[in-house]
Length: 291
Image 1 (tube, rainbow, N blue to C red):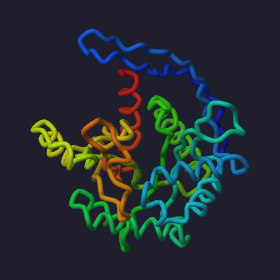
Image 2 (image 1 turned 60 degrees about the horizontal axis):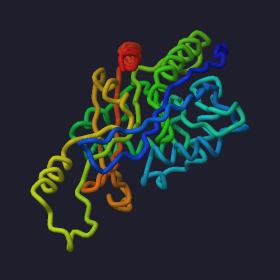
Image 3 (image 1 turned 30 degrees about the vertical axis):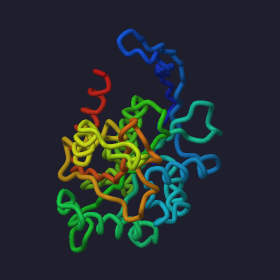
C-alpha cells in the first residue's frame, strides 16, 4: 500500500466550564479556553497496543468481556497503513482516539472476527431495525463488509473525527490501487448510544415527582448519541439501530447524567453502502464545519 499520511495538527478549542452560582437567574458560567494540538498518526504496533485495547473495551462496554480484545487489537495493528490514532504528546504516547476498518470477509477464519460476526448476527435477530443488516453477513450473501471501529476518550472533542474519516477514504483508495483487499460493498460502523432512565437512588425516601415520572417515561424511548457524528452518518444508511448489551450493566446510577436521571448505554450499528460512504463522510465534514 502506498504510504501517504503526513502528520496533521489541528488546534481545537476545548471548553472547560467552571462551577456556576446556585442562583440560576443571575449566574454566568466562567469558561476557560484550553488550546490543544491534536496529532494524527498511523497505528503503531510498538506503542499503541494498550491504548487501543482500552478504547476497544470502552467501545464494547459491558459486552467487551465477550471478545478477545488482545486479538482484535493485534489485528488492527497488523494493518498500520490503514486507519488513524489521535494523540496530543507525540507518537510514543497512548492514543486518545482511533478509527480503523477491518475486512470481515478477508479475516472470516480468524476467531476474533468469528466472535464479532456471531455477536452482530445475534443482535440483529433481536432488533427489528437491524434485521436487514444481518443478511449481509450470512452466506450465501457475497457482500464484502468493512467493519469500522472508532472510539475516543470522553473529553476528546468531536472535531477530531472528520479528519480520520477523510484519511480513511484516501487510504482505502490507495489500497485498492495496490490491489489490496479493501474494495468493500458496505461499511458497518459499530458505535454506542444511551437512554436516560430513572435513578433508583433514595427512591424509597424521595417520592417521585410528576416531572421525574415524565422525564423517566420520555427517556425510556429517546436515544442519545455518545458520538454526535452517528446522527449524520445514519442518514445515509441502509440500516441502523441500537441494541441492548448481552451482559448486565452495573446499573444506571453509576452513570448519572442529571440529578434525577441516570443513563443506560446501548450498542449501535450503522450500515452504509460503499457507493454512499464518501457522501456520508462529506456530510460529516460539512456538519462540523457549520458547528
